[in-house]
Image (cartoon, rainbow, N blue to C red; front, top):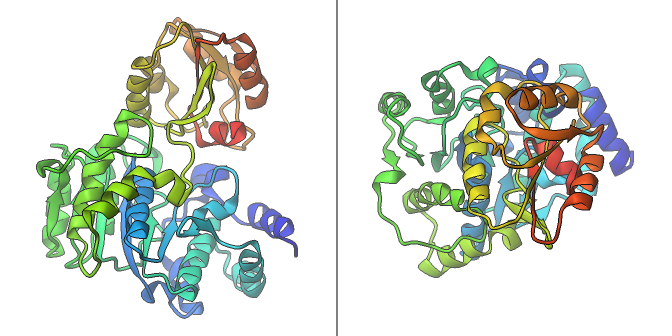
Length: 403
């Protein structure tokens, strides 16, 4: 099969949470355990850092990878979902996994996939682990896909684990309180492996402390530490919330030499080093156009605070969501003084643009409905003047289509 044919087979034959939502969520580790055994347990052949959280885990993973790259290490990076190309999920020192590697891996293991009915995520996690072992990385930064305790990545024993932020997202699978969600995230805490918590929260801290104690794991609340004020290569003041967790993780990591210059250069050049996209990413000027993948209450709240800090004449917001988001809880976070362009991403999980418009309209927002992200984006660009500001977001899928 060609690379395109391989991807088509992967996306059409196997369940994928990114497309199907809850129906693709596999709440057991049996599949990934049997698959990695079939692959000769590649996850035991390299060192790793495990990163979980509701918001900030992607940015934190890229920041960690960038600093370690600057320190001269060969660094694997596994993240999800991808925005433009599947291969964004698996990188080494910023370079995506080769197309031929993907094609060969799928061909070699296709019988196992079909016989054992593996999920899309189990397959890609196994691919990443196998690739990192094959390429002999010094360390890999492994981002949790969903939750933590039952996530397919949770078969690794890392050098240190990091939990970034806990918010109300995926409540149908992870629980309907912050404490319950924290319990799922705390599942990545391993026996005698240090755990760093980026943000202290009175409701979730006791959960992390209890699980850390059960595992005899040292727990570090990053907010309690003092660090220098570093310049970050990611736009958006909200990124400062991730920095303390990243620095505490690097400070806790043993066996790797990281200098002050490595930290300065790694944090400052994260986009160049790791090719991170979709985090307060500017894709146009005159008018300024920003896209951001924030898609839940906590993430959007931070991003909207950043929007308030911008200077512009008029604000235009191109927005779309997936069906499982509680739009009634999210809509109050957005500014009323803006023109809205409601759209539905090209995805099975996309929320109908008319339903989205109704919720916002009932709350006093003004805007128009468009049958596609592309048409909504084009309308915003056509209407916006030189000194206006265009924001694109609400979903990874919306940002992916614009990019």
